[in-house]
Amino acid sequence: MYSHTERFIIIKDGIDIQELLKVVPIEVEKENPFLKDMLGLMFLFLILFSFFIYARKKRMEDIKKENDANQKAYAFDPFTSTVIRPVRSNLAFKDVAGIKDVKEELEEIVDFLKFPAKYKKYGITLPRGVLLIGPPGVGKTMIAKAVAGEASVPFFYQSGATFVQIYVGMGAKRVRELFSQAKASAPSIIFIDEIDAVGKARGGMRNDERESTLNQLLTEMDGFEDSSGVIVIAATNKIDVIDEALLRSGRFDRRIFIPLPDRNDRVEILRAYLKNKPTTVNIDELANMSVGFSGAALATFVNEAAINALRREALSIELQDFVAVRQKVLMGKKKVLIFSNEEKQIQALYQAAKALSAYWFEIDFDKVTIVNDRLKDIDREIESKTQMLSKIKVYLSGSAATKLKYNEKFSNATEDLSRAIEIAKEMVEVYGMGEKLIPNENDVTFMLENAYKEVETFLEGMNEALEKIALELYESESITKIRLKAIIDEIL
Ligand code: ADP
Image: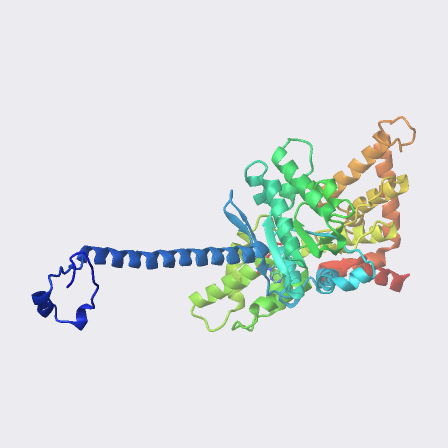
C-alpha cells in the first residue's frame, strides 16, 4: 500500500480526478490567479522596457549621426542661438549684369577654387582676401555669391555688424568658428559684409569688443595656409575708415572697386530686369533717366514701373510708368546724383581733366567715372615732392578745365580743392618741402598757385584730347586708362 508520506506527481489531464479521489486521498492544488497575472504583467513590462531601451539607443545613434553630419556643415552658437550655415549658391556670373571688368578680376579666384591643385603645383599664391569697395546696392554681395556659384563651393555669409553686436568676447569666438567651419568645408568662400564695422581704424574711441574681434580676424587670416582653399571676400563702402592692418599684404591685399553702374552697365541691368516682361520701352531712354541709380535701385525701378502698369490695367509697361515711379525710387535712396544735361557736361569735363592729368603726371588709376576718380593712392613709405605735387595737380585740374572752357568755377570742385590744400599744407608744414625748410606762411599758397598755373598750361595744350575724353565721359560715364591712352596716342 501507499504510505502517507510519499508524494506523486500525476498528469492531471491523463486521469479522471473524481475517480481517483474514491481510491486515494489526494489534495488538489488550485492555480493562483494573482500569481498568473503578476507574471503576465512582468513579462509585458519586460518587453516594453527592452523596447524602450532599444528605441532610446536608436535615437541616440540617430542624434549622433545627425550631429556628425552637422558638425561638417555648420557650427552652433549656443549664446546667440544662430547657426553659421553655408549656403549653396546657384548664382552665376551671367546673372550679374554689367560690371564686366569686376567679373574678369574674379575669374582667377573662381579658377583657384575649382582647381586648387593646379595653383599649388606651380607654387602660385593667391590673395587670401578680396575687398570689394563700393556704395550700397551695386551688387557686392551678389558678385561674391556668384563666385561661389561659379566655383560650386559653400558660401559662408556673415555681416560685420553681427560680430560686434553680441556679448563681449563673442565676436572673436564667432570669427574663430566661422573660419573653422569654412576650413572644414574647403574649398569655400567666407563673405563678410560691412567689414568696416569690425575693421574700423583703431584709435579714437576705444572699443574692446571690436578690437578683439578684429585681432581674431587678423590672426585667422595670417594663420591660413595658402592651400587651405578658403577665400575671404569682404565688402565695404568706406575704404577710408578700414584699419590699415587689414589692408596689409597677405590679408585683403586684392581690392576691387565697384562703382555705381555707368550708362552701359545700366542698360544691361535694365535689360536683365525687363527680360520676360511685356514692354517695348526704349532702354536707352531709361538709362538716361537713371543716372546715379545702383543695381538695386534699377531693380526697384523696373518693379515699381511694372506695378504701376498693372494698376493702370495696361497691356505693357510703358515709359509713362517709369516716369511716374522715378521720383519714388529716388526718394528711397540716400544720396543721388541727378545731373541735368548741362551739369553732366560740366562734370564730364571736370572728370576728364582729372583723368588726363592723372595719366600725364603718372598717378595710377584703372578707370575714371563721371562721379568717381578712384585714383590709386601711392602705397609708398617714402613719397617724393614731385609725386605729391602731381597729386595736387590732378586735384586742381578739374577746376582749371572748367575755368578754361566756361571761364567759371563750380561748386563740384570743393572736395578736390580741400584735398589739394591738405597735401600742400602737409608738404610745407610736416615734410619741409616748401621754399625753405622752415615753413613760411606764404609757402602753401605759392605751391598751390604754381601747380595751378602749370596745370592750366598743360590743359590748354591738350585741349583736343580733353574734349574727346569729356565727350566719352559724357556719353558712357566712364573711361578706362587704356581707352584714355588710345585717345591721346591718336592725337599726339
Ligand atoms: P551690395 O552688397 O553692394 O549692397 P547687393 O549685392 O546686395 O548689393 O545687391 C542688391 C540687389 O540689387 C541684388 O540682389 C540684385 O537684385 C540687384 N543688383 C545689384 N547689382 C546688380 C547687377 N549688376 N545685376 C543685377 N542685379 C543687381
